[in-house]
Length: 296
Image (cartoon, rainbow, N blue to C red):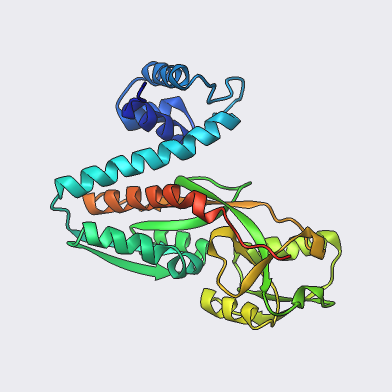
């Protein structure tokens, strides 16, 4: 039985997150040529080509994308074991900003487990739209921000997950059949709102805004009640709703990238632990979140 060295997996993930072997080398304290040799050793170990070598920037092959999912989960479990057994005396305050839908759905579980293993770290969590969070972080309000990015303009931060965008309607109502299409959405600068309106406009389907809320819980309640339909990230779909597809005359909206942004002046050990813990939690939960409810 052959084992995959942990340092090869860590270098592999650093190369993905940084976008180049040169920046990955800086992160792991090696030379670019040493990083290249590590990637080659990893490819030989798993007998697969992980990166497309002819690309101007690093791009994963299909095997590389699968390897990345497994690598992140293995590294996260490794780090969690070490953190639990060493019981480091990490203390301090971390100001975390995250979109409403994640603070209401996934983060309570993730942060609850983090708090259990790091009881001396105080978490200060704030919800807002992604663009607002990033703007506020530049003003010094947050140590760490979880933000959604449009794939075409994603830059900066640490990529931790790619979210499919899906149309969501009530399980008990058929608002998606009405004309014009009733929409439940958030105010600008919501990325979902922009994708939703642009997609409907491009396909020429008439629509009207029937419910406006900046709260994930408010939007979820309105959709559950059959007031209208909305768009959500695939992992944040609430109970009492179902996914609507192109068969219902709705445009495909693609994906968004979820990234972690660390404040320029934030360098505490508590922050580094939380950043790695959140990234690992998303990596470990990816298979479960891929099983989404769809309508008949």
